[in-house]
Length: 131
Image (tube, rainbow, N blue to C red; front, top):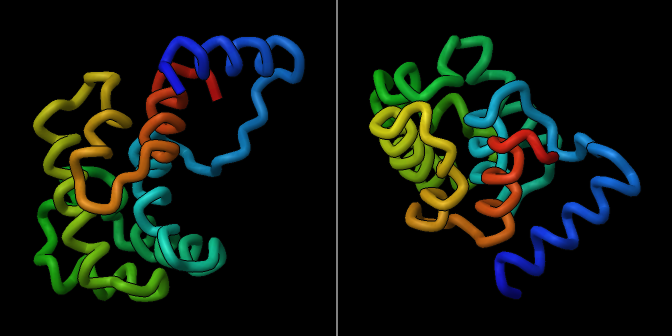
């Protein structure tokens, strides 16, 4: 579907129903982390992993990058495939830290292993304040 088509559909739905706030997260980075962690796992496990990242003060790009990958994997263990997801989160954190303030995080998600088009589109919309 061309980008203009889904933007028109989103604008129509937003005008009719308002923001739905269906993807939980306090920050755009947390939403992207959730999109990575939710792949092949139940949401309750993602919530547990995010809670551990928050409790450890590691739910920010720079804080996540300061961790050894094995320690990051231990914090997200509940989400399954934790070694693979730790590498993906490290890549995501690196991209976010390198381009902080740029509203193109969703597009960068496609370049990280495991990024899906729907996750990238939703993240980009959220960063623009449209979700």
